[in-house]
Amino acid sequence: MGRHIDRRMFLGRAAAGAAALSVPALFGGCKRVPMNEVFAGTKTGHFEAFGIDHDSIRRVLLQVSKKGCDFGDVFFQHRIVRGLGLEDGKVDRAVASVDLGCGIRAVKGDQTGYAYSEDLDIIALLRAADTASAIAAEGGPRPVPEVFSPTSLTPYYRTERPWEEAGVTVKKPLLDAMNAAAAGFDPRIKKVRIYFEDEVNRILVADTDGRVTEDVQPMGTVYISCLAEHNGRREENYAHKSARAGLEAFDAETLRALALDAARKTVLLFDAARPPPGEMPVVLAAGSSGILLHEAIGHGMEADFNRKNISIYSGRIGERIAPAFVSIVDDATVAGARGAVNVDDEGNPGQRTVLVEGGVLRSYMHDRISAAHYKLAPTGNGRRQSFRHRPIPRMRCTYMLPGPDSTESIIASVKKGIYAVTFTNGQVQIGAGDFTFYIKTGFLIENGKLTRPIKDANIIGNGPKVLEQVTAVAADMALDIGRWTCGKDGQSVPVSLGLPTIKVASINVGGVK
Image (tube, rainbow, N blue to C red):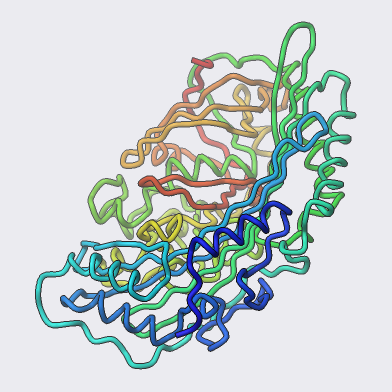
């Protein structure tokens, strides 16, 4: 086994690096590893620097399998996050964090035994494996292969400008330019806040089937909010961008456009009014309206809710649940998307999963446990927040495919309704799909034309029923570029979502309360 690095010494060195906001890929004299390289099954993998090799992995899996579990796996993670914030043109935050550890799982039927360790010493790992193994009844040990087979991955994200090389001196001029663009857009804008975060997440997954997989997952995120004042009124709005990429995805022109978008949306609210309440046609704009698809419909297609008969879609595979022009996918393979994954957190390669095809429910989103329950292959949806959490079925990039209509014809078909552009806040009852979403920006539709901007309105309804009432789908599908993060069972994971422009025959539109 390789040289052991004490966790306190490791984190101490990490903190020293964080003070300069130039955290290297490894600490303790280890060599720097290019973040866009995947080390599937090699002897020079990232985690060997922390004393983890195939022999130690096999020892841990033997320990977790000693009581006869059906399946066991280990999940190693090394995550470095750095953030830089700007307010009123001055740096107000400069932070960094480092996380390192291993989660160990034993599966028996539908039950999971789970334990984790922040210490990668073999004794600590074996102790955690012993805890996880308690889920299985006493019996003969499950065999573990002598040799692990590396999983070959198709890369869906690459980096041209690694985050390790993007320190304060690189980022601050970009934030200064964003601040100047937003503040200079309109004299009513009085305050601008910006936060720029980057992340490098390295994982290794190995299991009792003999598979071993490593991946390097980059992420960049920029958020900007603007506060404006006019005639005693205050309005605030925001814009954000996130991608599995390096600094090349956050060039000066891209960030300037993001700043101007936030400023424009903020001052637009001074002209906005509340729409009249009641049942009416609602046109959902392409892009971020996908949050409705994600929350009110997508969660109901996660297999654990169906396995437990919680979801309204339980037992409905093969049934028509939407018009024939509606198809929905959950896709890990969208290059550079926030929700893209080369491999899920169970070691299954990323893939594209068709959930609804021509209005018919074709598949749920499966992790290993639900796939075994339904006697199917996993769909690569086993995800977790960190090594401290067990994997569960989660969405990745969820969107509706383009349809046969045009945006113009859809809007022109509405005599009186609303055009919902962006959303913020909302509540969803996952099993039934009942929802309430707050419209941040949008427009009235009057006699087939967009007229006054609207704000302070809720749409209230039921996701599955809304899906049934879709009457038109445009060809303009857009995947939103925002920093969407999905919460479930106390875990948060990055996701992407999207939608073409669609028309729903009727949704209840309510006031701000």
